[in-house]
Image (cartoon, rainbow, N blue to C red):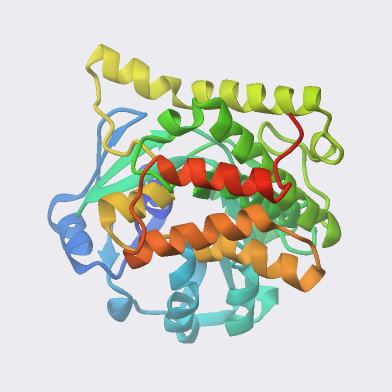
Length: 358
């Protein structure tokens, strides 16, 4: 089968590299011409979590891509989804499948262009960074999830599962919609850490910041409930614990988030202490876009999209709304990224009664 990865950054590039190393027929597609040229001339260089690799595989820009396409993994930023899928739509056949290997709720956007019947949902919980043209960093481990939007188990989704399993442990799920929502909910606290130009672990080691984080998640969980979504249980999204938390319950959520942060980032500290790798990416994808790439983040498609859906459903989300507004101000250059932003947000949440009881 011919596999096309549209968006050869951290998520798509890592998936494509491991598929290629397993002998699959993979082509990387990216609009950053320098990135494509570097891959063509020198191969794709990968360092970080799994050591050093040099992977040789075809790469092209969207304009150079030729059809017909079979299975496509769309791994671009959410804000680029419509443009990316519109570009490749003429190259698809009635039997083509497009896997949304992205953060954000992009399946509906893709389906609006090519028909929802050709869309497969997926969520990456691993992470990395596109450091320089032709250079990816594998930053943190994590599984992937893939499934048909209607919950069926089909041959094509089995194939998508097999391909992603070359890179990481992958779950073939009958509830990919719930998984997409769970990642969206988790993303609300990640967006919050983008209010300051500092490593995510530095932000979330502060107890008050974790109190903000779990309160953001509580608001988001209420939106999913109103939408009738069944959320899967996981380390960072546990719906029952957010419904009517007591101060003791809030304390447990804050403490559990602290343990998750330490466990998630422990591998970075070990590698740096051993001198085996100095990680370039120290924050979230939001942090990476704002402070390393100096470009707009995915906030409008994560917290912003959650706020939009909350408004449609009549669910109040004052803390998420204010968080998004503050990020937009940073993107516009009217707000400095500093820890005072988190103090301001905490005070806002307290005055609005939006913080979980503590």
